[in-house]
Figure 1 (cartoon, rainbow, N blue to C red):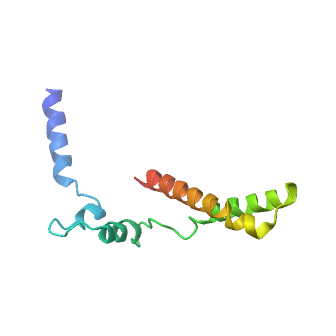
Figure 2: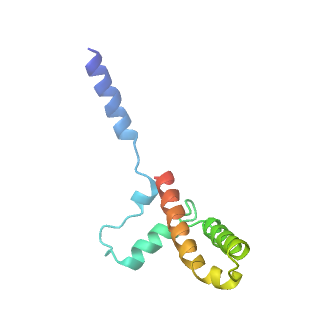
Figure 3: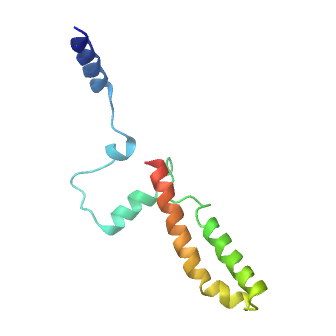
Length: 105
């Protein structure tokens, strides 16, 4: 008897369920291209996929590393910002973006 009741309740919930906005926007006739994927993933006013603050951890770590090497190893600051600072910035930004996506999904 309780199984019948839970089935009926689940059926009512299934009828009321609506897919999320990003699923409703999908057009099955639209071809999937790299540009379309990036535009759909990164441009959304309701759910920003690439918020403005996202590069800040990479910038902070790259500048911090350049300052550290300049202070301790006697290296020049600007060359240390260019390399390995650019790599530190890129890897940190990608890791932050992936973490941001995992948190949202």
